[in-house]
Structure formats: C-alpha cells, structure tokens
Length: 57
Image 1 (cartoon, rainbow, N blue to C red):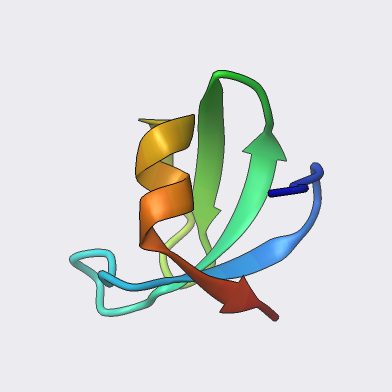
Image 2 (tube, rainbow, N blue to C red; image 1 turned 30 degrees about the vertical axis):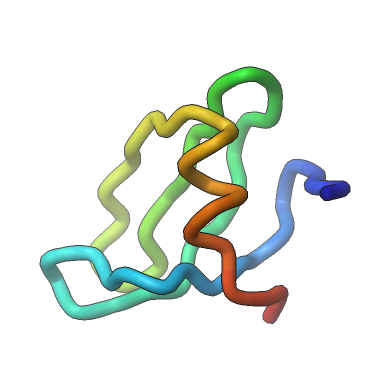
C-alpha cells in the first residue's frame, strides 16, 4: 500500500472517543496517526495499520 504523510484514512476499529478517521503524521515501519475526533496521537506498526485500513477520505 502507498501511504503518505498528510493523508486522511478510515480504520475498521474506532478510537475510544468514537471516531475512526485518522491523519497520517509519520510513515515507515511504524505509523504515527492522529485521531481527527479528539486529537490524540498513537504509534502503530505498519502491519496493524495495513490490516485495519478501510479506505482513504
């Protein structure tokens, strides 16, 4: 998959705040994602992001 910084993506599982839309802040072996609902940032392995990816916004 071809991800780049600044893209907005939709994930299968929502964040605890209820939002499942994320902004990509870092790409590599690990991804840094920012929740577009509450602004919380998380680091996830690439494999987890690719498995939970649902589509681009």
